[in-house]
Image (tube, rainbow over all chains, first blue to last red; front, side, top):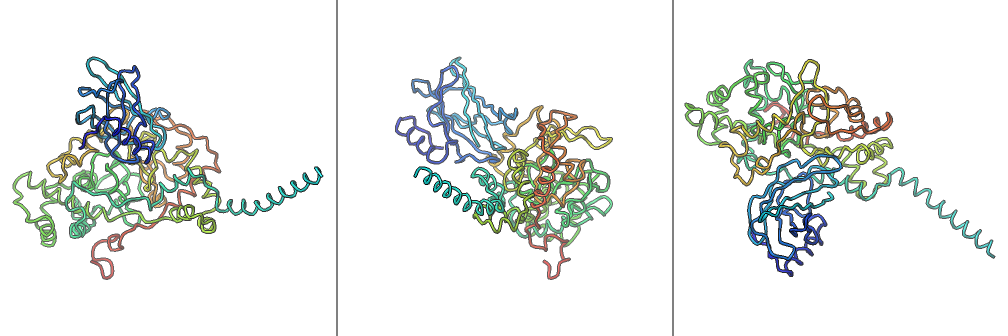
Length: 136
Length: 404
């Protein structure tokens, strides 16, 4: 799998590509984690994201100053807050791709509606969470 | 002048209303679906169903000779302890491959309702509790269940070796029959028996229903055809299905199922302890040597993502797999033990949302009135359609005129 460069130009290209297809494919810009330690965005292998289809994401993690975080320990959680249930699968990070990119496999969404996917990211003793909202 | 203009304006407005009225009536006949609803209808349309997904665990999944062999096996009652039970005993073609009973009856009394086979090739999980992850591995379970076929893998494999036609059919697909002296060789042949049955079952797919013709008419803005296909009650039932009925939370996609596991608080059949469902099924699918990652699977590890990332946990207690809603009227009674005899009973259950006996029900009361429930019911009956398969596959081999 090709690495995702973090140069501003290529990031813009990713964002524009994502926006041209679906608002769900990627956060339109890096989202700051809850305590502000990290800036995070993702791209999805399935474009646009469909319900009932298992697929993978590439998660990019950098510091708020734009330096890739290459040694993060990441866990995945999520669900539908309105329905009080979690994800139908147990997705996890399966590969550290370098340059702050991580492969997240095993994502599937089994209903239309509002979903959240939350990543807990820890690096150098600094644990923080970031949540993405999806409307499927 | 001012008054004159007002009058003119009033006349013009009245003319507009008058002109609009027939249109409004016309669109009432065809019903005005919102763009969001049209998107939902398209997602449920059979034309949105892609080709049958690849089956990497079964190299022979699309081999016509394997399907033909599997067809013979499916209808052969010699694969049972009393010589009277075949797959078709509980999966009867004329009942959309179910049996009309609350709980299946093989050589004994099974503990669950016989699920439909039609369209099952699209599901990552088999059985009500998903304890197998492919058609071929599913087919092996009932053969050795003491209440279903009540036979054993040794007996199954022995019959393949003894029967000249089966031996030839087996070897034409899978190569030379090995010496059946060890457990591994027996298991290999047994798995291949499942793979032949799985290849046959992949041919059993749902055909287009009246609902699908209606959706096509909606997407084509063809009000006349819409009005011809659906009554006002069926349209209203469909509207409730898409909206306040919340049916699409689980019954979504062109097969009207997400193939996931949900606790819907269906009480167990009288005298039976509550069924733990998926909580047990997930352990079994991870343990069976006939799963995607096992030695009899033809898949690479990367093909087994459903199994590798499968969810476990207490929320699965009492959860059962969502069934397809296609062909409902032929597949009564409903639920995992056939506890609910009619569609009306099922709709009443979802409307009332009783608490679960085990685990936690995901349901909340819907608050629909009797008329709305009746409208939902007539809509659900529009999902019936013949199986989209060559008729020769819907009867025992050699029984169709000019058969195989």
